[in-house]
Image (tube, helix red, strand yellow):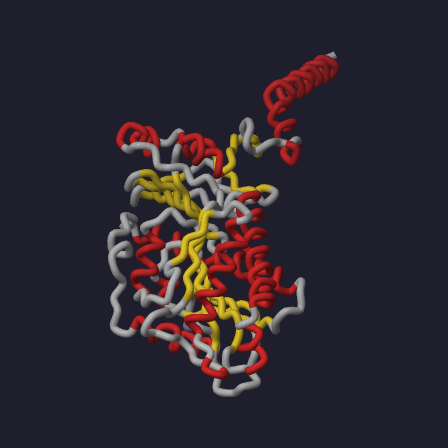
Amino acid sequence: MAKKSFSIKYGALLVFAAVLFLVFCGPMTRSASAAPDLDLGGSSLFLGNVPYLSLTRICRENHISYRWDDLTGKIFLYRGNRYVTCLIGETLIDVNGRIQTLGAPPRILEGTLVLPRELIDLEWWKDIRKTYPPTMWKDFTIRSVMIDAGHGGRDSGGIGFAGIREKDVVLDFAKRLRDKLSSNGIDVRLTRSDDTFVPLPDRAAATNSSEVDLFISVHANIARTRWVSGFEIYYCSDPLDDSARAVQMIENAAAEGAKPASGFSSCSLKDATLMDLMNTEHRREAIELARSISASLGEERLIRNHGIRSANFHVLKWTQRPSILIEIGFLTNPREAIKLRDSYYQDRLAERIAEGILSFKREYERTEGFTK
Ligand SMILES: [Zn+2]
């Protein structure tokens, strides 16, 4: 009898536990299992019992800016001079220099960066809301591009076959590229539109003080031997080989003795972490841009493609935008030099590069700056 009563009690307890489980855990379990179908821009997503929101949604709705480095998984949220630094998979966060612990870590879910909702309920954020005006939300649209025709005026750049001057070829090419992009709705500015000398720091300053989204510097190459030909795209980083170092030396010569000018020093972003993350992000975007142009070029057999390389060009280093430098061909190679003076060839080359820029723009906008 005692045994029976025990099993009845035990059974009732099991039913009660099951009801409890359904009432409390049911919705959470459903949310979690429905995760892949959830619109991250909509309601919270539950992982376990923790509500998460996408990084871009948190920032957009609360007017917070962010930077993130996909290599180290570091996320930097800021408004005014207040910030939070966190790491993917880590619950420890740095709130304005003080370490705090989150209940759950930032994560990447199906390629989207998600943050626990508690992050915006923390004191740091309530405090900021009162103190600092909302920052401009970066809307991930590429509207405007600065095209920089290398050299000019007293600086001829490289002199190639039959006395063909780099400064003339690249100015002509920059204008064609401008026309291709403009006809696709992009607002294009030029650092020079005639044969004038513009110091490298001024080119960077003009870019930093304007609203342009990308910086593209156009140059033409020279080599010791006539047989070298082809196309190269550079982004800013330490050169990885000797020939990249040589190109860097030639292109930086115009800045001999020059110091970064106004626009660089007037940068309002004083925080070193922010600067560091911004540079990392710009470099990542510059590499994506270079890849996109390189792929577009590969669709037509126009020119030998030497691919994407890195060098410390001053004009790229001083520019606070995703920046690349394109060497459109070798002027010392007679065949290539003659082609580079040909308007039909220039047009086709400009067409391919413009298509590469436009395809980068589409991907950048679709993925909100490669965060999705
Ligand atoms: Zn040059």
